Amino acid sequence: MRTTEPQPLPHQTHSPESYETYCQPLTARLLRSLNLNVSYLRGSGMWLEGEVGGVQKKILDCTGGYGANLFGHKNPELIEVAKKYLEFGEPSVVQASQRTQSGLLGKELSEILLGETGEGPWITHLSNSGTETVEAALKHCLLDFSKKQLQRKQEAQKSFMELKIYVTELDGLEQMAIHRDWRYRLINLSATIAASSERKDWFLHMLMQEHDLLGLINLVHEFNSLQFE
Image 1 (cartoon, rainbow, N blue to C red):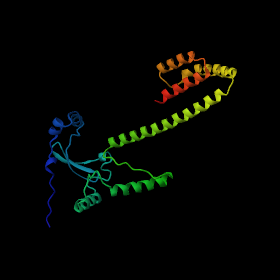
Image 2: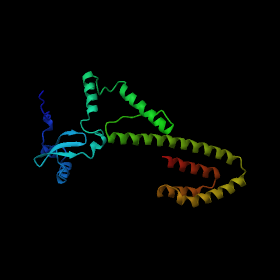
Image 3: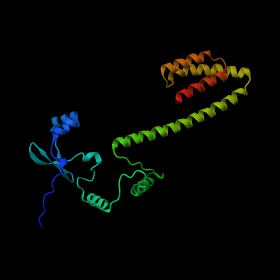
């Protein structure tokens, strides 16, 4: 049985000028300066085939599409799966749907992480690119940080309320003694506070004008609230 060499698709025609002119001028110039301005026509395993100086050459792919081709170009097992997927006719990019395969993948990953960490279940967020992955990670960090900040703020609020109750039970002389001691300590500690110079100046200015223990506590509480923002 005679076989023929598969022909490249029309859009795979070698045309570096079009890419440099209409898509990525600066990137294309950089590639050209490094002799990397090659249009690859086919790939197999770790090797790519392309035209370099008018000569067809095999070139070792050392990046693998930054992980997108982690299993090599034209991996036979992946091609077989793709063929079955296309032949079966299962739809793709159906946004409002239960994605069974994604769920099974998430379950398997969760079980692996559960075995490694002893914690779970884990939730898998799938993305299309490294950019989306980093963006999602940053959003999760910000959400977690906001949650912890709220918890800290609530704990501080509770501590200040308990402190006020304690102070109101003291007599006048005890309050005056504590006020002098705390104000002295706060003045000395103000230089080490992690805050802007403007906020430190404001705090010191207000501190020097505060002659009441409850007022001093309220000032520190206000400053803490500003620090949480």
